[in-house]
Image (cartoon, rainbow, N blue to C red; front, top):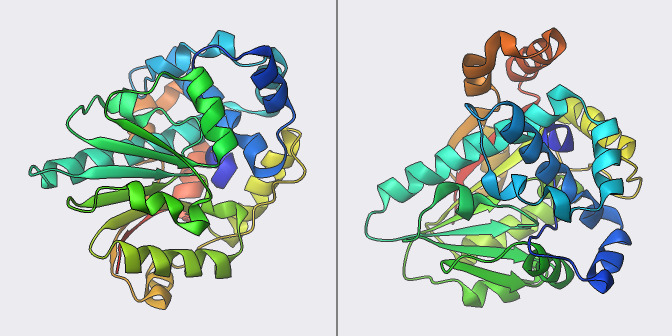
Length: 293
């Protein structure tokens, strides 16, 4: 369930100047959800490192405004925290597989990257990671997180495709949209994906989505964190049918919690275990993997 499963957007990592911190405190709407997945990655890394560990996220604890940390913490449960990192756990695995299948070289494009720290977690210096987000988000990211030598930060509206000219098209690309599409109308997402396929034919895309039932839970969670302007709108009830509407092959579809349930088991609260089981069984949150073009 999107933000119930850890949706985000803008993120970062050095030391915020007073001016930048003030600007960030005033972020509204979609951009205001930036810190939810970051806090979830901290939470899981400190409590369940055997399942998920993100040292970069943990190192940012003192750099995130305390009011934001408190608000997210008070509004979140163990389940919503695990939901977020379970998505990242699966995405990290998809990226590892994609890289192993392209030993001749490839790149990863994080669309709506926010404060995502995947390149730091995966430690793949041979792979170029493009982090694409709105200019103000990229500014915030630079202030918080030191970019790696193999990271390219690109500020711009992903729907306008100015970022596309900076991506190396001589190698295969894996596009990752994590916690992004839920905030837009389906018609906008369909147009975007068709243009993405036209510009990057043969590349692949993986994104997360909820079904219609999951949207209601996710939207409720986002509003509970204090954000009333970023509404959850996009959902996928049938991944194969959605791929058919796009005219693109469906590479695969994954639920969120298979590995989390195996690794963590009874270390989690009863409610968390039940919620994960129900979500997987009813496919309320999935990762959709498409071949573009």
